[in-house]
Amino acid sequence: MKKTVIAWLWVLLLGVTGQSAESKGQRTIVAAFYPVRIALMNIVVGVDGVRLVSLADSATGCLHDYQLTTRDMAILSKAEILVANGAGLESFLEGIVKSRPGLTIIDASAGIDLLVSEGSTNAHVWVSPSRHIQQVRTMAEGLSVWDPSHAGSYSRNASNYISRLETLRAAMDSKLQALRRHEIITFHEAFPYFAEEFHLKIAGVIEREPGASPSAAEMASLIQKIRTSGVKTLFVEPQYPAKVATSIARETGAEIYTLDPVVSGPNSPDAYINIMEHNLAELERALH
Image 1 (tube, rainbow, N blue to C red):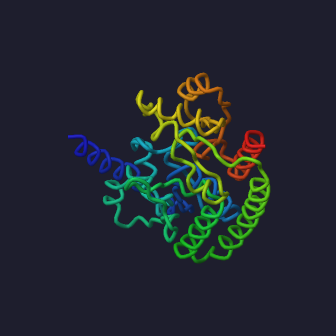
Image 2: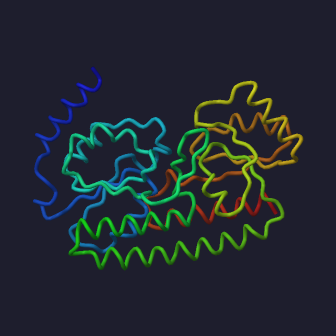
Image 3: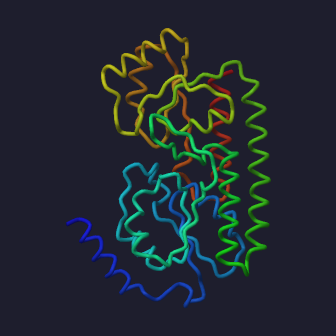
């Protein structure tokens, strides 16, 4: 029943909004997710005739349980190209994409070696600056194929942004390698790529999925691990309540810090870099 309703809504929206953005002198690029939008803001800056819009808004957070809205479907009805993080993150798009066979899709994670744990692919590719640089290249190349008349602009903009990301990555690597400690406990499974890149060890995870509180046995196991390992740094995420982490800290004497997985924030071209610099400052404070 639900799929039927969605299908009829989609047909209705196509009828109402059938006039394409191109006919109004603009071409619409849709970003599926916040970090993709921030990258695209840098890639398409100054390119005439291109309109950038997002599905999930900048306050949505991670897309584990995201459901498309009628607004999202209206956006997709006008779109010529959709840029997704990929790696299985945007599973909510599968049915709609099948309804738009002419929609060009860029999978920003294509060609990246993905991490798999307990049979599940980790989709948080962008949290690693090195892998995010690969994503930016893939986005720019895909846009250049789709819109060859502006290929030079996409390439130059991407190169400029990548240069800034490489500077960020080098500074983070230098400062994190100099830290005395390298073991952390994270809020959920958002940081394996980040940890691999900067040689951090994730000693434990508070919630496997945001909102899925650990069982009593999992809590007891994590508390015991903290007590025996000496890891006293718990990292929460600004998008989610810290109630469970606070309980663990109270039991163990651990300290709570914040790591942001860059899934929400301001719609600013500098947002990814600013958030990562804040993450670096938090890690330096916690692991000095």
